[in-house]
Length: 323
Image 1: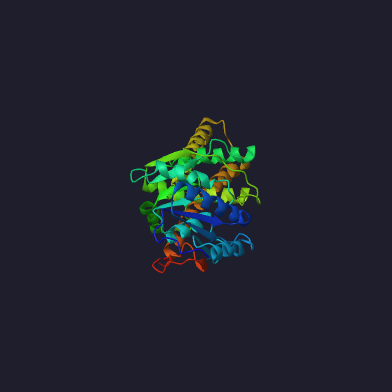
Image 2 (image 1 turned 90 degrees about the vertical axis):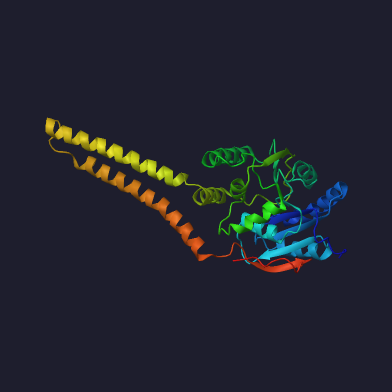
């Protein structure tokens, strides 16, 4: 192992690892070369989010061979955002850069992102003019981005997991203590001083994306319920609209009864109205139930993540993750 890393490096690079362990050696090599060229001291924090059995041996091998690398293994899969916050809480750098493990985020772009950042601009996103995903995946991502922007007007529309965050701002993320965090929503609430830097979207040469359609939909649903009141508003507006329609239909039936046009209201129309109204009510109760479930999760005060094992350099001054 090389000499101990600086206690306060210029940059801490945080990478949650789920299925991209095959790219970690190349990631370290390219990161080391780009940081040396930029004249920056650095550390690399790899968090094993229990995606595959190969991840931890690869992380541990890198951590044992290079002093700049620290490995953290979570006790189970807590999700990309929780794993990222775990790395942020253990980071010691003046800037904290978050990126994916598949090399679609080029390490060579970190220096240009840091040049744009500063105390007045504590958040810089890597902007990809063109992504290397499939056309269908790009379309779904843009649709998701458009929907989130309407639900969260303050959300930076160019958000991505390739971020450079000034350390004082980044460490405030741990104060939320959410069981299901969404980093970009939290950052949008914390600051509006964000900039973007255009970077080239790299090709994935190892494995496939861990985000299946089911996970993407689940992630989107969690974002809406945890960070937006839009579902509640939709439920309220939908309930109000249903009440107006029901009232209008009731007036129509009453008018028909007194005018003689309706002598015997049918069973079909009556049951249709009842079933439709009950369906809407159940939908609204389901939305309310999701919010109640989130409140219960917050009341339990479960930790956002649990670190099971560490590898590499460990700074004894680092605080233990709080529950």
